[in-house]
Image 1 (cartoon, rainbow, N blue to C red):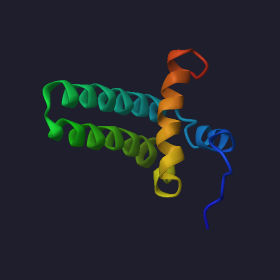
Image 2 (cartoon, helix red, strand yellow):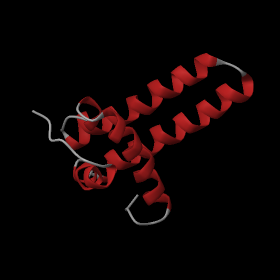
Image 3 (spheres, helix red, strand yellow):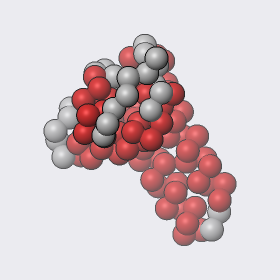
Image 4 (cartoon, rainbow, N blue to C red):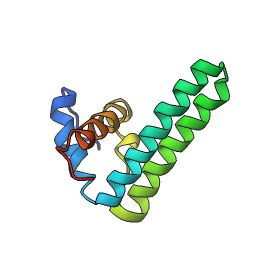
Length: 101
């Protein structure tokens, strides 16, 4: 049974604990960046398939990080909304230098 969190603030430390391996974090960052770039391109070029490919790229990179480096189950499966926010929060924290790249 999944642990319930009352807020993202409660969830984020657990999310970070599932991303201790720096390769996993790097793959998440690349996936999140690809998602943002492809989503922007989808809007600018009016090409919906780019949005879908951005989602596939984002989750693909992240899941490779979990399955091959962290060797754990992605939080997406138990907390999809908080996990999505966590991806962006971790990318922000990597860019700000609060989390090691």
